[in-house]
Length: 348
Length: 213
Image 1: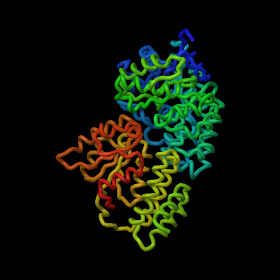
Image 2: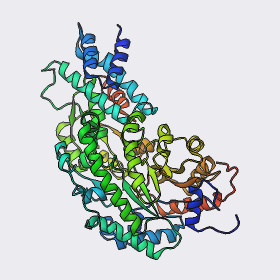
Image 3: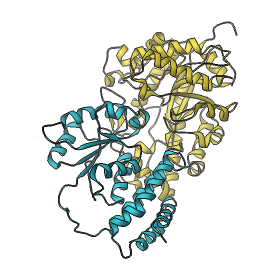
Image 4: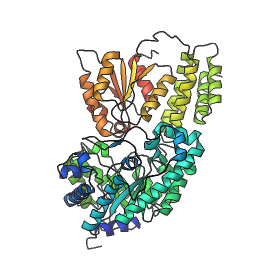
């Protein structure tokens, strides 16, 4: 490989389990765009135009290989009528659960994706990114139908529902699946290249592999089959080693890997089946020096890059707002320097 | 059957979510002795092993949660009413700082209560201001703070500094995802310790309270 690939070519090649010109880098920065525009986070996320402009400036600055049209994790819950709490120094959080009595699930109806003003902001961002960028993957996102209930009901009530009220659990999955498919396909229609399927509850960190196989796995199979574009499943810092073969059978193209997992072992297990995305530790990243950033990048490249099928990213799917620009520059520079194929060996 | 065998049987029942079996095991163990002793010799080791297994990825968070909840319910049924100190604010308090996801707190709260500790629950989404005020009012000996997101974890620093002398401040134990992912963070924010799971929380509380229930 002599010429420089575009970001899209680079990513598609690695998703095909071949070696591109260099390791693709996804800097999954959702909030840093607000700094670029000199805005507070809530103002920044109030308009899709801001998010698109922020993403374009960030890519210009760091030269990474994607544009990320996600606004904030509880966006969907806001569309469902739930509470979202903004803060100045970090990601928006979902507030009190919107379902206080599980019996409400019987009559629950999903929001209409086409008319939701909340979702329209993310779709607007996606449309602008599609118009103003070329050959760069635009990554949209959905919270999986199986994981959304953590915000709909609260974690405890959801675990109770899963174990004790299977009838209502099944009804909730059916409603959430309809919403998730419609939301993913709307983003693809607006210009997203691929969808991040965020499914932390399916991680063996949260439910056992046995329970996953009878719940989150089946939900993912049904849902992903109806999404009209490629997906990558992300467990948002949760582990995935115990269910990797099952995840491959959901039809997803890649998987986000926790910083708590053995990346090299996962690469061996996933080779040819799933591309890996990860797994820089976003929490410690906040206080890395440039030298540490370089060492961390070298280590993940050594563990997972040979043979392709690897995108370098953080472990959570969202880089904390506190991570300084210097660290992001150092990560991008180290990826360019040490990620050039062919990679036989990188001294980590 | 010795205490260790009973603890193993109790652990198996908890992991199988078998409330009846777990209750019978504990009732049998409690015959001729007091519930607090059984909580220490049977419940604590069972929960400790389940916590360790979660750490090693062989037990899920859902199992850890259900185990703690079942154990807490059974022990609270068996504990005698009108224990010494009832009516006073407990010497342990727990809160979720700023975040609104309370599962981590629930896990620790259940585990501590299941081994016989009285714990004041300050709730979730608690502001720094409110948490400091509650501590000034109740004067807990140990304050456990759970967080989900990094910004909330960083705010522990403010809690600790506002609880600082001249008033005696509680021992501050922190937990949650940011502290698991960054092993140095608890020291950076001025906490006294961190626990990676509910079993470690029990161990730490016992260390700082001398095991007094």
